[in-house]
Image (cartoon, rainbow, N blue to C red; front, side, top):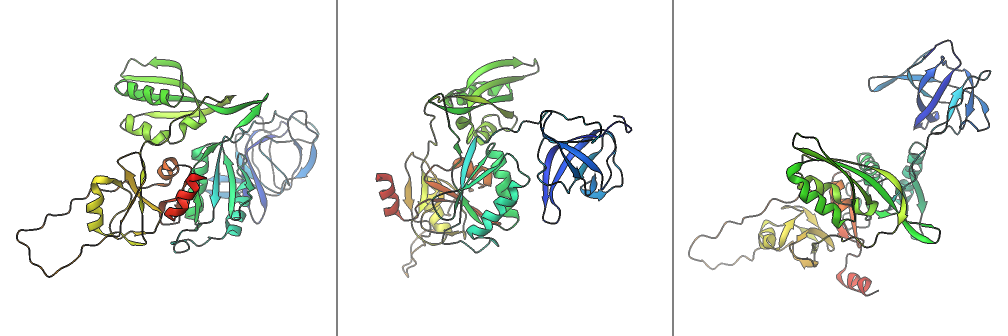
Length: 405
């Protein structure tokens, strides 16, 4: 670009600071920008411009930000001091304006409920645990995360958060837990729309780059999730690229399955396509869960007795409570188990040596795995140090009553 030409800078990202407010980030196409410079702000080519003054101009130096007295073409700058600045607005010269078309931000396609943590272990690890603190943090996120939507629900302490996908929402959750927040979240749900009187759902374009030996398993899994094969291209070197159109519902929980099917060698990406009529029911989780029946600590003896019932999420000495999910059942039904069982000691001598307790290593429970694994009647409990799974209703009689309703 030409340094002497009229200024043209389009904001493509946002940040927020409690000191200076909203910060716009973008690359200068042409011209120069200085602190305290007056500019014209356009919202698209047809928008009505207004005059504003840039406060500070900062540039990136590694991970740090440093103030600069002048920035030119090609420089990525951060500017503040302009109220209401948003994605896609153009900062340009007042005398010779050169506005650019607005950037399009995709609408949210998934929604989750963020709840106050109500488990018996609540408040032990988190610094921010109240509904007001969670609400304030979500409002702060809205200042820079333009694809996010947050609203209150009829129930106290539960907020509905809508985002562009699982990754979008789990990044927010991971940032919150690292900052000391403690909360519980529900299973992701698709945002449906009614178009011309018909119920419609978001469709995603998926590209999977896999080895040819894993092609059959991936295609079968995509077919079970209502995926429609659009294109298939082998590269002649043992890999093949598959392109699918699939409902966003079908991608919930698919990333872990995809990694297992491709032995970790597959690459997958997806992008929103459009809304289409509802594609019908998609099968959910095939296995039930093991639910703790009591509060306490996990004992190795109890794990040995439960080893043939399924795979565990917990290990010895982990705290558990009634209604907490401690493992995956080997069958399709939920099972209430005694995970705090201890060996009864007696003064009778027995002949022979006792068998050593053999335990299968537990499944490592990550935030992404937990969000993908749970069903509608379950929650993920997230704290700065732990990720736990639990039933929405902790008491067994409450769960039975809810299932009847």
